[in-house]
Structure formats: C-alpha cells, structure tokens
Amino acid sequence: MIKVTFFYNNGLKIKGFELKGHANYSEFGYDIVCSAATSNSLAVINSLDSLQRVSFEEVFALEGHIKCLVKDIDLEKSQLLFEHLRLALEEISKEYPKNIKIFEK
Image (cartoon, rainbow, N blue to C red; front, top):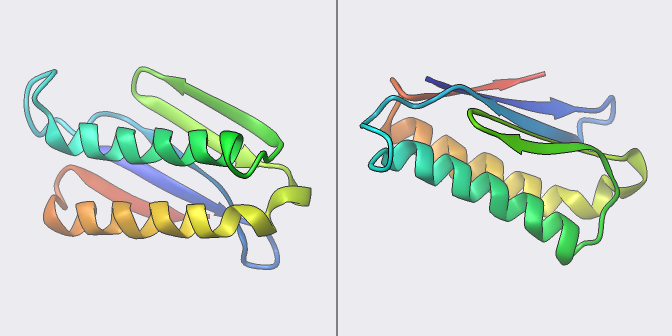
C-alpha cells in the first residue's frame, strides 16, 4: 500500500508531502495505481521547481519513497499545486482504497 502524508504548518498551509511504499495493485510495469500516484507527485515537484521556482527544504524521489517539503517563504505560491495533488490522490484513493491511503500531519 502507498501511504501518502501531507504536512501542514501552523497556519494550515500544506508544507509538503511524502509517499512511501508500493501500491501492489499489479506487477511491476503494469501497476496503474503506482504509476498514477508517482506521475502526479513528480509532475507537482517539477512544476514547483520549474514554473513556481520555489525553494525546497527537502526533495527526493527514490524507489518506493518520494518526499517534497517547501521552505516557508514559498508556501503561498505552492498551495495551488499541493491542493491539486491532494485532490488527485484522493480520487485515486477512492477508486483503489486497498492500494493507497492518505494521512495529514
């Protein structure tokens, strides 16, 4: 199961997210849940970097582990993309509840 955590600051702004684990929906290369979660997450990271030019506190993408935290100074301009990702992953979670779960911290 992919466990997604969205991190919030004290002002209830999304500070970042983390994906851990594997969906185990299908075999490697055919896992549509993993592909959807990964491609949405990486697209948001790339957009934050290339389009919004935010500064990252931490960002990496490894096998089974993706994490992205934005520095406080850039939280405001990151919200639309973070909200987009949250909505996209929530929809995936509704369709595949055994394969992806969302937490907030």
